[in-house]
Length: 139
Image 1: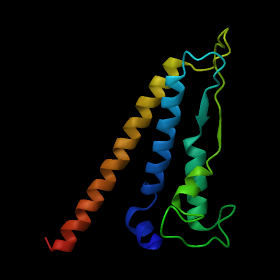
Image 2: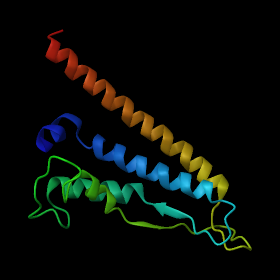
Image 3: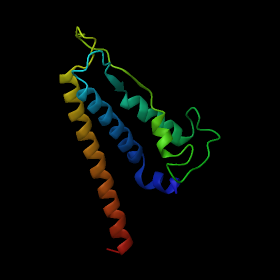
Image 4: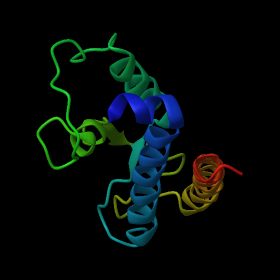
């Protein structure tokens, strides 16, 4: 089933999951903007996507000898591949006196950009699914 998904959706299913994780990370940062001592988390979407592509093509670390899965609840399934994304801490331009490193303006702009990317990927996948449905109906 994974090979069929790869041929139909390409990298867009992985991109959607990574964008969702990035949106959650930014939402956590925004929610904790006033929490003393909170360290803002960051994820490099480009690096995470490159890693997902290498793993999918079988050239990345850990790709050789992996078991094929058909359910994200299985060990090594879709959920565990996206959870291996390296998250780090963002470095603030102006550190706060209370130790909080969230730059609220940057987080809001980043969240908006990520949300637009998520919507774009979702729209592409929806149009792809609609095309498949109409092909199956014979229209």
